[in-house]
Image (tube, rainbow over all chains, first blue to last red):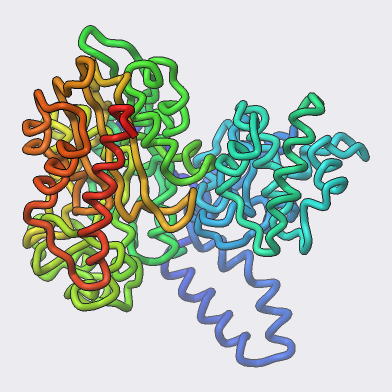
Length: 210
Length: 339
């Protein structure tokens, strides 16, 4: 069985145990109650605290760049993108798969990054909103969102755009009604829906390559 | 999220071995429900066994129908030509569920394994016999929050009208499972003692005294595939889902219908309801009644009355006692094209 699985508990961090974690976290707690120096120390100590947990290797291609990482099992793809790779275009809205702000493409399919454990993306290709732009040239869907005013506050927009591009690629943008149905996983609290539908229909009817 | 350990496996055998090795270990597939439950601390896993790399995502024609791998994504099944042509009820049900993103993640096996959306189950500060069973028995996991049922006498608008018990009135949230129950699907599973096949209608169970058990899987069993037998219902199939908004919401009531018609006469019927019980609610008695009946409103009303036998409201969900028969009549009208 051992050759059939990648069991990481034992292979990484042989030196870290519950005991060392407790020592580290006790030290951190002590520092935390002595501000302001403690705040700096706590900030510096955080990677050590995180390192007390199991870290596993992950190789994933993100926006065309192969990333070789070492991460905790509980890290979601969303947190990996935002917190470790600095790709903050992908937004955290509900963090429970209900709002669509975290929509990215995984091997060409739109998914919710918040409910995807990063380790499950091993060997995959991820595209985020940052990967949609070619240099300084905006993607036709980004242009259309600007043209049609498909946003107000803009927080849901990266997710809306990633979802909209996939919606057309899937062949689910043949009518405004179909767009509304297939975009229902992206919530916009500002209520820019009418303009979002117009933007998507414009790109679809314009025939631009998405 | 609380920390947990993680193992990736590449064979079903290794997956089963990893999950029976220690308590608190769960298979991880699409993660659309499990990761949410872990974040909310409804489930506190010791270890997750990543089965996403198992070769179980194939959808293929068989001698008797179609076999759908447990790891086939909901969107892949819904878009598959064979499914759309022969089992449109399944495609309709799948597309009525969740969002495009979630359907790209969620698997067939995971859809079957999803937990109830009862808000008491989802909140560990609230009483719930499903999350915190009083009896321990062979069930894995420790109590998590107070026991009891908050929904009985509480907020129960989404809850069951059929088959509830004094311990639990939660409903199974799946759309896909309603179609699979209606279409006589069979579930192929593998476990520590080998493989077996479970009729779909026996896969999920009613709560009784063990609401912690959503289904009849034994410890360590892994879903491999679902078989659907060829049928003659493709032309007269309909999935009606009634919900609080037009899309992306769980069913208040749903109805899956498959009929074989000879002109205006119903020759054979398959019926199941969702959002009304702890399992997809197959209506075999109503199916028998419909056999040989003319497709008329009178027939449909009689069918609906029969379907509601034994239904019970719990206060806030009393409206389902009216909504469910009306939805059934409406779905039958659409399927028979007499609307």
